[in-house]
Image (tube, rainbow, N blue to C red):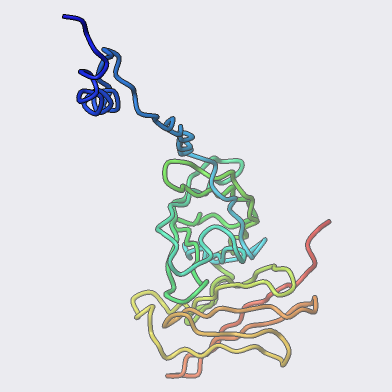
Length: 246
């Protein structure tokens, strides 16, 4: 029986639907995919990086045998904040290699902390300390500090002040501590600090027996005086304010 076109007309809609759905071909079309963006790898954190250099406001100090060395960090330097973490210190005595221990101390005020070096040599004389700090697992490069230990015969009996002398730049800061005779309360609050003359700098209390001194802008020699209120006894420290060496 011959195939007539008229007999295929009813099948045309079905054929069109089959082609539209991909029929009549074994190859399936793959939808278009946007290439995945490759992210740059995160930077690898640097471990044990060299810590911030250690520097102190005072360049030279004098104290009695056995007195602690109290040092203010320079503004903006390592440890110069009340929230600074505990920092270990190590001070080596040039010439002998003796090692003195120390640490940081939080004064509980914004931008006010200090470094404390203990085990001060007993032998009088002038020496140089090489002081470095441990931050995490890394040590700072050492910084040099001139230290003078007074002979025991020159140490004032009764109330004393430490350091008994310090050298700073104009505007520099020094921490002073009133020291009472051995066996008495070293944190006695009945101590008053002041300067001997007007314009010799400013003082603010940062502890029961601790005072923060800030030098004036004018170079010169000034005196800080501590007075025990109970009996009126006095002691003084000499501050030399000088421009830094060029």
